[in-house]
Length: 266
Image (tube, rainbow, N blue to C red; front, side):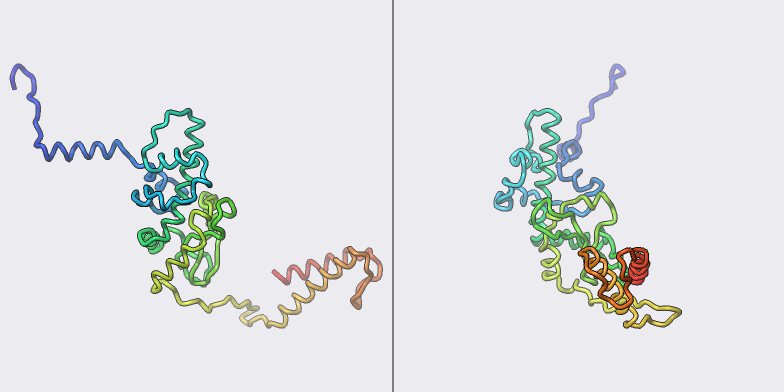
């Protein structure tokens, strides 16, 4: 110390470079990071930068995305347009839509399948709500490859059925962001993941005894008969079944029959 002042500390060059890189990495955060980590986007995986910057992978998407070039610049972190808040919000919306459409293509690649497989094994997409599937993990899928047609569904490979997401924030995700081919490709690439199909079925019982199939058939026939009578009366056609009331004012009796039939069908 000289004159009460501290001498400057000189860092070694390698330590200075490490500190500089750390500060730069903290100051710069890719657009995709907060998008993936935000609530409601847990189904998405992170797309590799080289995949996003390869124009071949984006073929045809410019027709489906408003402000396509600005949205692409934002997703690839080269956006530098000085615009008002309203315009920025529109570009943000287009960027999210663009990322979703590219995501549907990316998850069918080797790298994309590996990332989604990791999330599948962790159960990030949820468990099958069917009791007899015993919490088998689910996979996100679409029922249409066209955006705006239907929201994302969850596929169980054990019972081979589709389910709606439990959370409303997931129910608003477009199914086109996952496509109709992803789940099938995943199980073709990783055939060891295909589970044994469950043969367990719920069997209704009364005091421990199985309900006979003929009883269910009879309830179904009664329901069809009630429905046919209602449709015939609406057309002005008289009674066609024995025991049906002749007058057209037998609505109360038919309502009771309908209630019994509907109760039996539940």
